Length: 414
Ligand code: GLV
Ligand code: MN
Ligand code: MN
Image 1 (cartoon, helix red, strand yellow):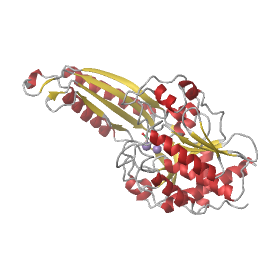
Image 2 (image 1 turned 30 degrees about the vertical axis):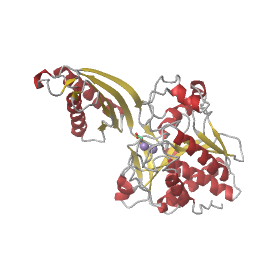
Image 3 (image 1 turned 90 degrees about the horizontal axis):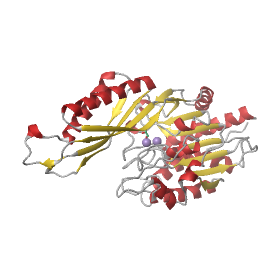
Image 4 (image 1 turned 180 degrees about the horizontal axis):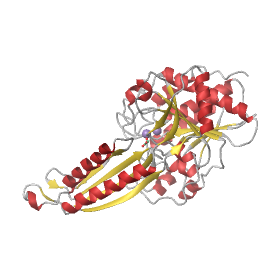
């Protein structure tokens, strides 16, 4: 068996992630922000489509705004999908998402350079919405592909642009989003930066993911009474921001007291009307709760909701919460994990398995395919931050392992 040579594709993958880190591929001055269906997303998809075509793929945009590159196999069975997301958080890093796409493109480029086709087609998917940083939901585009969307949520971005309008600007619609369902895949492979410190601490470039932690996300509104900052006596106030501050510390305390992998985060907060001399009348914030298992996550979420309700009652505030995101834990496929580990060891790297605290499109794609994920070390575990950094040599190592995985899958399908 002739193995697929990877050339220096890993280096090019990293360079391409960096190239997409600025205008016109970012909608933020001095940093990276690429929201779903934004101008930056459009520019990125156009350039990425060229890269896919140069790698030998036919590229198209599906009904959800995902870019899909297809490389034919010698057979017409279900494809191996290699996917990750092209959207970013606000002021994010270059690699969270795009690295997995660029490495997928490099896998195909390596096959194409040798005129090789596997027994199965390969699709590389650049998902449009994994982070949920534009609309108040997340992973909508992989949900559409996995057939998990029955209805299109009625929602708008921070500027008041509805999802239907945003889809319309791309020539898409709620109907095309629902119709983006994939017929099914042989396997789903996602490479991603670890976004944590484990691999670096152990001096390892790569690890095989065993599964992804369960997530819950709420949007909370706390309402009190807006008033004059100079004339309202302290005992008479119903300050929504002071109440929210107490709630946030209570949420942190509940998560800290758990002493497990449970984590809870308030990552977004808006105080209204938002003036130095006005007591905040309303505060909106998000709560993100995660744990390796749903019961622990749910128990903590119930404790959080009960505690913030008690704080609101004590302070004479009203409180509403809305569940905006709920994903169970997603174990990776045991046989594919073994296949990925065999490729890792075959390429000369030590075997290491680890769990993912971060969410990934693989959680969703598990509905239509067995999934495998490969983690790449990232500097100091920093992610969702412009300081995110990946060594070119580690991306090169990831590419070699992905190609070994594809080779082994080809053998098992032959
Ligand atoms: C995605 O980055 C997530 O885990 O929130
Ligand atoms: Mn992310
Ligand atoms: Mn990601």
